[in-house]
Length: 111
Image 1 (cartoon, rainbow, N blue to C red):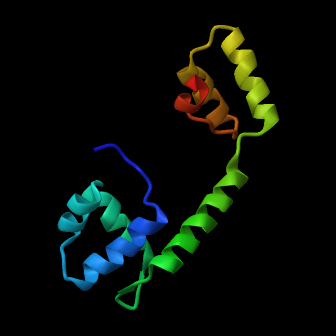
Image 2: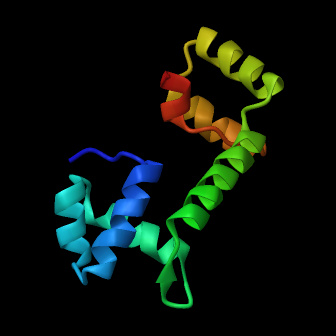
């Protein structure tokens, strides 16, 4: 199984399956997702021993919005382009930029 984020409908299904006392593995099988997805979802979004799919979806959207704050700056992108044009490997480029305080992953450079 490949990693996929849960969608809102799946969160409501999780709540229904939990009310039927199904295990996390059984829920994962029914939703066709990795059991670790269910485990992380419940760890993040269970409060007072209660899973709330509506609140879970709101939290996910909030985390997604906050992730946009960590986009790569245009200056860092310019450095990446310059070093790649000088035949530096993505791993070398990522390592140098990380040491300079502008961390990027070599996977991001490949993309």
